[in-house]
Image (cartoon, rainbow, N blue to C red):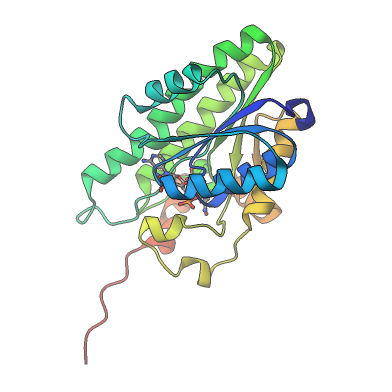
Amino acid sequence: MIDEYSDRWALITGASSGIGLEFAHRLAARGMHLVLTARRKEKLEELAAELLTRHGTKTEVVVLDLSEQAAPARLYEEVKSRGVQVELLINNAGFSVVSDIASTDRERVMEMVRLNIGALTDLTYFYLPEMMKRRHGGIINIASVAAFQPVAYMSAYAASKSYVLHFTEGLWAEARDQGVTVTALCPGTTQTEFFDVAGVEGWLKKHRYQTVDQVVKTGLKALEKKRQYTVSGWGNYFLSLLVRIATRRTVVVESMKYFRPQPPKEKK
Ligand SMILES: NC(=O)c1ccc[n+]([C@@H]2O[C@H](COP(=O)([O-])OP(=O)(O)OC[C@H]3O[C@@H](n4cnc5c(N)ncnc54)[C@H](OP(=O)(O)O)[C@@H]3O)[C@@H](O)[C@H]2O)c1
């Protein structure tokens, strides 16, 4: 019953594009007021104006780089100072780094770990205890189908999403009898800016993908049903089960074919 959240506030990280942007549209359509956060200010302000016109809901914009260690605490304090009580937290901001070992940008990987794991964990621990005290609230943490297996050439990303999945499931068990649901949403390939940011432009042209609409619907349904996790799409769900049957060696060796960097084409 996501409608129980109508006229209450949700906080969405990474609301300036892709899955986070779609969460903003869907939740505002159901009457939720939103705190939108990401780094691109203009995108968030445009979205806030659009939501006001379409749905008449309230929006607060907080521009932040959540990979900075102190940013989640700054966000929490800022939201509190604006008098907002967060009833639904969508921990969505995240990105991937795809590369082989020799050309890996170590700094960029650490930035990813701070965002995908650090900020998500910090924000969860800021808001979850308050929700449990009120015996009302929900958190959706965005994991991935990559959470179910190691993936060569995006090893740190896949591992970060395994963290998100396991962290969320543990908290789901702890919070379930206290009126709060913590759900991990695991999308497969989805049509967003994700692959361009990861450095694998063209991926969407060569692979089947889901739309953000499909992914977000799945996530909200899982929250309503108080599920510990959900995989978006039957094909992706099947894949998440298949990797449990195969040997770990087979799974990781097979994964190499997806993101192996192509050698640069020789000029004629
Ligand atoms: N697309 C897929 O195939 C796929 C599959 C599985 C899981 N996911 C997960 O889904 C989530 C959303 O990704 P998406 O596919 O919607 O990709 P996207 O279109 O690239 O959106 C990523 C969002 O995260 C924000 N973000 C990135 N770095 C940030 C930072 N340092 N501080 C604050 N915000 C930051 C971006 O906003 P700014 O650039 O404005 O900061 C943007 O709003 C991610 O956690 C991703 O891992 C995606």
